[in-house]
View: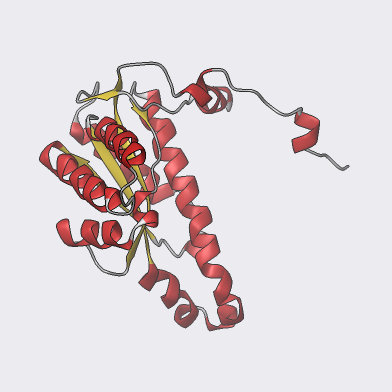
Length: 211
């Protein structure tokens, strides 16, 4: 029963060249996100994950915010500005984007809800990062299974202006910390160079079994 799931993991790749097309309707996109947001686990069931689906003009708005904010961090580096402008345009050329957040209020509130675990409160943000990673992986793999390509970007982590600009533009709570942006669409080219022919360490270096 696990074979289809493992095959989806095996064939998933990173796609940068995207088109403004989707083989599935927006309602199905939302259903995928709803299911993952509901069922992907979180530590102590804190449910700190928040997800926003953008398409159409909202998607265009996102990448304008990213472009303006990120280019401002590059100073007068013309080569970096040119390369970054091209890459961000690729992300914006997709059908949409999924924005991932972790609600810091939910994380901080866990200590109050579970005082017995308060001494471990410094670990709660780490565990929330574990959860957002699982959620990103689940949604990305599900989208590819539907014929969509995607990549994972972290521009909001590079620039506080991008992070605050996203919250302001989409009227989102200030306690939401953006963990990743996932542009997606029907691929118009092969996977990114590093993803075309993957190489792997010997499995014995990565997995150990004790009986």
